[in-house]
Length: 382
View 1: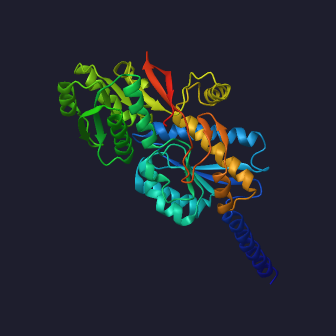
View 2: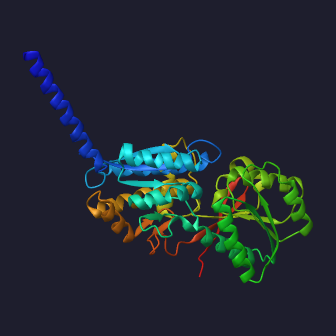
View 3: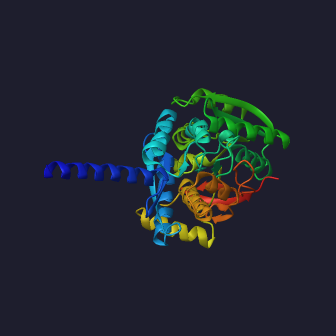
């Protein structure tokens, strides 16, 4: 009888502990932690972007926790690998919401995966801050979704303005990855601004993400001999395109977007002398930038941070400030705080417009020179 009473007591205590744990988790925080999710490609062809953004996010979490956390609570960053796949991203988000019960999400990293999760995130009213998803539609009709980066169309216009004003380009060829929201969005904005500036789009060539040979497209471009070739895509595609263009003797300047960040690592010779739009320059004299770079290198085996790392860092700090200002982990309170954010970050000041996009951020133009990314100029679209 005594043994039976003890068993019943243990069962009651066990059940109580389950309900107590569930009650804590439902708010996304325990007595000492606040759970924030991260979604991005940590493996696969686009891993350079996800791992960089996560490394920046990890550094921010480490610094914030060392400084006392958010209102005395440490941040617990729970990261899942999207593998650059839209279905994987949706599954990752569902796990963060249902299993981990996070209070906010940093991500996705890529535009396609973020758009895939968008409707579910909006339905859940989850506070979301993407560090690097630049597609225009990411924040459209999504009052709970914000981004730390400038938009596809914004950098497309900046690239066109730089091409016509600084490179004196009159004609341009554009290479577009069909079915890729990022490539299509930046290209459309570039073409509109380039023609508005008096330039002519001499050619538009398309390819798919699975293509490995770009000879046909580049042969036509070489025959037309445009002043610039605009290729807004990611390193794993841009690198081989630049390599083939060099082999073919194409002399036009190539111009790209922020997906080029990191192209100098494996394709320095092919990328030499070309330009791309980016979110910050590592050789900036800014004390905030240089302090970030020093801390990042110390935490990542002396590796230089790219713009994805800087944006991941800024995104976590911005979300932490919003949660701190909200004074709770309530979704609506965090979203309200994000709408009133004014955070001076590594990549510029983050304050959001009515659609959750950064207001008036400068676009940095980077030149690839000697295997290094060099600050060229900044462009502010008017």
